[in-house]
Image (cartoon, rainbow, N blue to C red; front, side, top):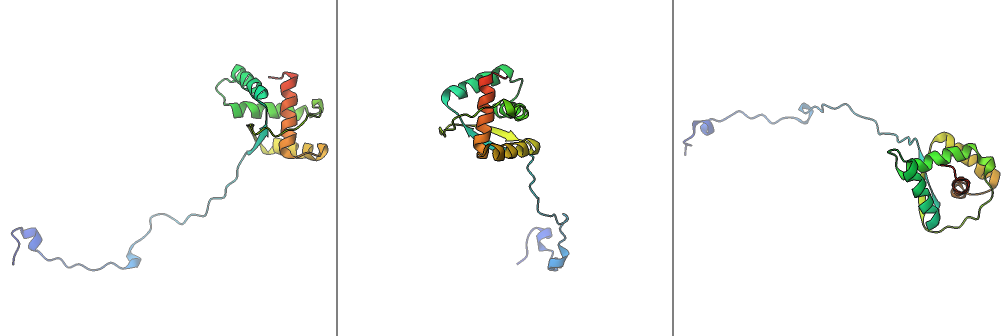
Length: 136
């Protein structure tokens, strides 16, 4: 039985393609090595401290997020660590986030050893002392 359409009635010589005929246009890539520039640290705060941090951040925001503002405060606090006194550390279940650069992170690790505290406790101490001193 023949087809009415002449295009369909023509038989083509179909040659199966080999697997080698398919060429991947992309060059093989190496797995991506992750190199984060910042490290995230969360420190506990009370409701009142959170209000103060947010109020200060809104006053000085200039298009920045709360975390960016906190990170700037921490950078200043690390430089003036000698003005920080011992503060009671209590895990309240509420946290603020700070992203630290490698230099600030290294300085925090030095302060951890100097004060004999954990990293979170050292960041808490720096941030709360800065807040109580009224630095914006």
